[in-house]
Length: 161
Image (tube, rainbow, N blue to C red; front, side, top):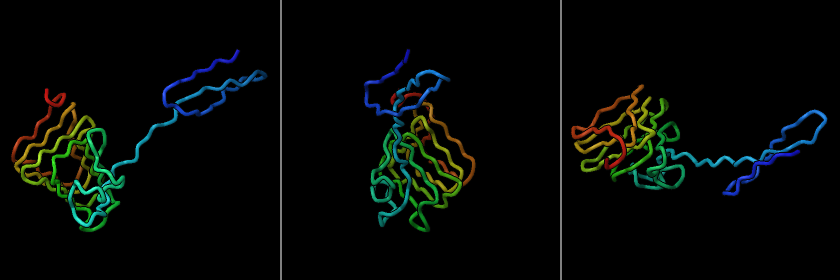
């Protein structure tokens, strides 16, 4: 007897045979992988502003569900970032190949979610404004240079909680 597992959401079919010697071949229907393109700083916008969509590989500024990635996809001065708006991202990942500097502008509050802040390269320079690690996000410094805000560096549970 063949058994089928069928999901009726937005799944597309990925058919994987489960062969048995001398018998029929049942198939297991599995959900397609729902990946999203990574939000990588490419610095192609002609300025260093965080909110310039042309500076991001996706053409979209990362939001609360995305991790902002900084690596070697940029070069020279285009690797430098001015955080000129209040970003609320799922995480920040500064790879060991990142050579730029991320600077928090005065009055700008940075909110980082559960993926946390991972820094293996590059430089971060805080201002006097708040940096919040929400939803149990962590600060993991493995390399590079991190100059914290002179204001509040907050670690906590759920945002607003």
